[in-house]
Length: 196
Image (cartoon, rainbow, N blue to C red):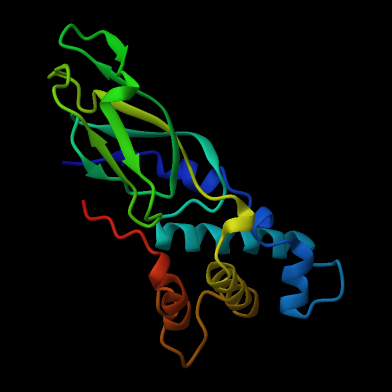
């Protein structure tokens, strides 16, 4: 079973400076002038995007997020935390879009790193000739004020790494595409591990 969603929405709908203010970033980087504000703002966005991608959590509330399912199957969702489900739409056997009654599903919000959705039986049959006939329209993400301090600190550490190392590689070092271990250690408790 595969849950699909628009990964670009997770990155595009979050402004990094809403998570880490430019003034705070400049203090962390020990930058006094305004000459590099545009660069630092771009690096904040990149850092927040990288952290979000690693932990599988939206760091801002995204109110128009959609997941697509091949059928009504109880499942873990790949992005969290899940804060509200607006509707679940599906295509019935006649290929007509309908909305599932809200009494037929619920979600578990106790663990923000592993959001789960459950369906009650019996459920209507879905159209067999659509790859993803079920659409979950929901709100994911956290209020910025509720983001754990460890995640904000990981963004700061990654920002400082990007700011200090502007070259693609540094002679005499090993190049790694992964996040540094210190950042991973900060983020691991908050990671939504989702297997496809």
